[in-house]
Image 1 (tube, rainbow, N blue to C red):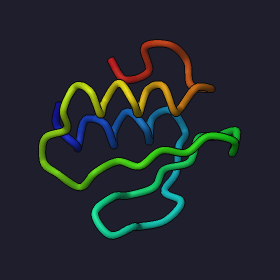
Image 2 (image 1 turned 180 degrees about the vertical axis):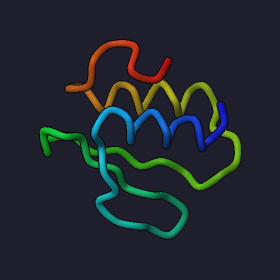
Image 3 (image 1 turned 180 degrees about the horizontal axis):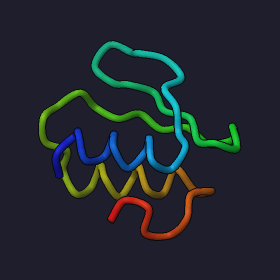
Image 4 (image 1 turned 90 degrees about the vertical axis):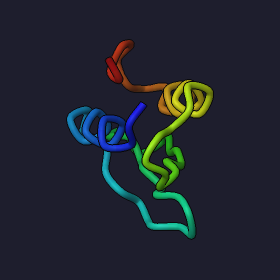
Length: 65
């Protein structure tokens, strides 16, 4: 999956950037209890996308579709 699609889905779900790390951007959910690291690669593998979905537990099911 393209990184820009993941970022677009996070923004449309109300998430915001918490901070910029070395090779990752840290995103926080709207409730403020969950966060995830999104790598700055052009392509994000399916396993990493699944991990992002799991870590952002408060977002509605299918938010990344």
